[in-house]
Length: 161
Image (cartoon, rainbow, N blue to C red; front, top):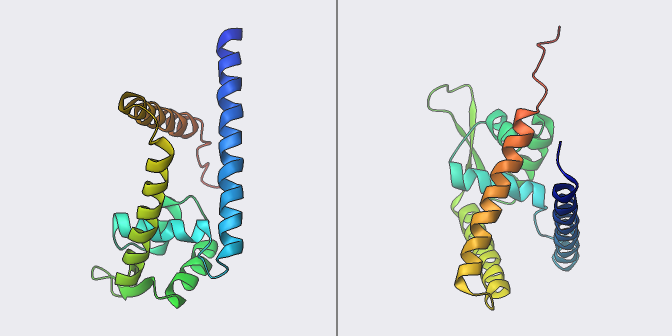
């Protein structure tokens, strides 16, 4: 059981995380309003996975983003219509379809990535390098702890029994 001091710090961390999430959501909504043709964040995440991890089947993509196949199908359809993703035959099983980022999809990903990292670099520009490095290390550590904590508490599939 955590001590009162540990709970107080956890409360502060939780409050700052909620603040950050609200700020990101507000910024995302503002961006969507200013760019009505922009791809929504959840759909863009699929493109990110396809660029970073390479071609994959829709089921594997759904697993990677913790979503259901019907949602993925709709989102992929949108990315295909925009020319950012293409469907190709799986060379291992010709009956199956692989999804892959197109050259335009990779360009859009790189452009968005560049804008994001330049913005973050600007935000952290006044921080001493040691603080920036510590922030990366601590954020990486927290993200890993978050992922491991929730993975270890996931309810195992009972197989329908």
